[in-house]
Length: 334
Image 1 (cartoon, rainbow, N blue to C red):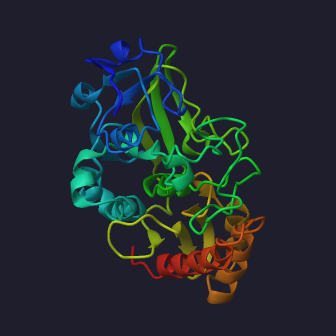
Image 2 (cartoon, rainbow, N blue to C red; image 1 turned 180 degrees about the horizontal axis):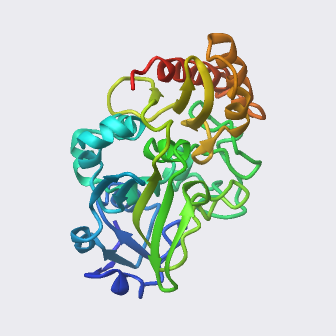
């Protein structure tokens, strides 16, 4: 690990004074919360910040969990474990609790914050190993070694000729399915954006997030909705413990008898960023949720998917994951 200067920000106003660029590999200033991603990448010599700003003092004001008639509000510095174990979250927003419970290890969930979790970097080995020169995330214009290399775990949705890295998180996929918003505070004041607008596309892979310099994620808002309780998160991985998804689906349903009134589908593990399958959702409305209608929706959810050899299997795996998640959510008692 290279030498760096260390600061502590006691307030969001003090944090906002620092020109951070968390979504860029070459950023000279980075925020530190749980540190479960940042410190890993600094040790690997992928991230080389000259200054690290510790924002853990902000936990006192920005780690709350509030459930009310208008929805759910989660503090950006709340620990993953605290949210996963919260009784009201488990009851009213099960997809969120399940996504967090299936992520990482108990030790990491105790340390990692929600804000840091949604900003975590890809697990692409070509990005995480600087000995590979061709990586547009690390060095714009250098190419993408994964396209012609070993890409079994890489993305098939939202990719381009510039990058096929997969987004590794679980929590953001559940947030995408539930229409969540991200609360930000920075030099320009406070603002909210959709979780779907937080992560940028693969056309500029060296810029991963839409955060402005100095902005801190201080919260997440999930609106109350009739589909929130009948929700689930299904994660497919190579082993059942401490492993990243090769395919995942967050599904939320509002049913009238067995007929779909509203559907929400988020995809993970196979996409460049947290993915929302809106065409598949629309196709289910007004229809009974059966294996046939779920299969038709799953085909739409993976429409446009592009494989690069080793990861071709993900297209069919993604379809089957969506079908399983839809049928599991439809069977949920609310």
